[in-house]
Every structure is written in C-alpha cells, then in structure tokens.
Amino acid sequence: MNLNLMNDLFNLKENKTVQNFIKELSNYLENNLMNGKKNPKTDSTWNNLLSDNQELDNKKIISKYKDKMLLERVNILQSYALRTREKGEMYYIYNTNTQEKDTYNLCICDENKSNEIITKKVEELPKGAYLGSVLRKRGENLVLDQEATENLEKEISNMIKKTIKEQDQYLESRRIEGHIYQVNEKDLGRIWLCDLNERVGGGIEEIEEIEFPKDLYEAAKTGDLFIYQDGTYQKY
Image (cartoon, rainbow, N blue to C red; front, side):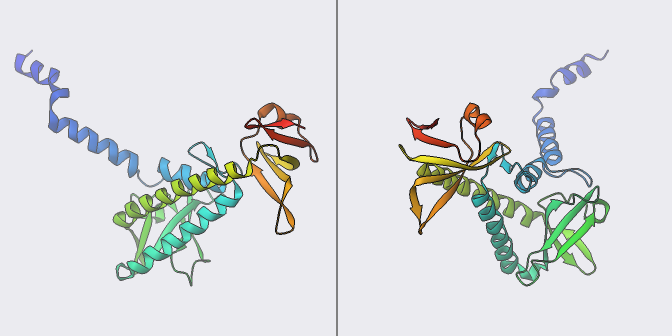
C-alpha cells in the first residue's frame, strides 16, 4: 500500500478542514433536520409543556407558570412579527397535530389572526422546517425564515429560563415554616395544597406543589393535613 496514503489516513483526525466539515455537518443534522424529522430542542420544549406532565428539560412546570410561558410566547411572536412585517406575514409551527400523523399546527403571528389554526402535512412544509420554525408567506407559498427562527429560539429560551426562576421563587415563598397545608387534589406526581394559615383576598390560596416527599404523596388523600417543618412537608 502507498505509504503516503497510509499517512494521510492516520492523520485524518488532525486535518482541521475535515474536523470543521464534520462539526458543521453535525450541527446541521442536529438543528436542521429534514422534513418528517423533529428538532429535539423545540420538540421537548413545547410538546412537553402542552402535555399533562408539563415538563421542560426534566423540570416540572406548574399550571400558573405554564400559562404565563404560553402567553409570553404569543407576545414575543407577535412583537417580532410586527417589527419585521416588511418581510411578509409570519407563521409559527407551534405543535404537532395529535389527530393526524406527520402533521403540524401553525399559527399566524398577528394579534388579529392569532386564533386561526393552520394544519400542514410535513410534505407541505418548506425543506428544513421543524417544530418551532418561523415561516413567511411568499405568494401562495410558505418559506422558511431561518434568521427569525434562530432569533426567536434564543428569545423564547431566555424567557423560559427567566420564568422557571420566577416559579422557583414563588414556590419557595409558599413553603412557610410551621404552616399547615391541606390536600385538595393530587395527580401525575403533583399535589394541590391549601395553606390554612394564610388567606389571600379573603380566601385560601391553592398551591400546586411539585416537590412533595414521594412516600407521603403515595399515601396522601384529599383532606389530609401536612405541616411544613425543617424544610420539608411532614404528616400533621
């Protein structure tokens, strides 16, 4: 065998041009999968948030902040669409259609048309489009706006991180040493508690707790009482 060829093969990993090509190809496959495939980042984000489990990156999101995230996402999309309206009417692929296989739901990012739902088969979407992609109307066709997609992914991601911090602060503020909590409901690893020591606006606030001791959760029934003591919930 040609010794020069052997040397070339052994030095392949050291070739910066090849390394850069492999890196770029990997990034492309990860972030811009072809029609019919999913983008793991955006799929896990919004499909999980809209599911019963309501999780983002293995972090449980309570209904109070799930609703806030979804509303903030609408505001972000509409604001961006308004700022870039010269580029054409903006559409956003916001989730997969549960009724039809290989089908996505799109919304129009205009406050006057935000309630309109558009359903598109995978083969009807532009090449490279995935859940979370931004599309623009060009004549009778929809085209992928990659720049808008990347900008909005960052903006929405920052919003999610900020909202999760707000959720953590809120829940921590509702776990009050020495307070008695009554179980109102439990489902899918979550438990809804009423703080009997604190009334808000003349009523009792219901708290959706996502960090409840597993052993207590399994046995807990509606009406049971627990005390928050030494940094955790205990049977009262």
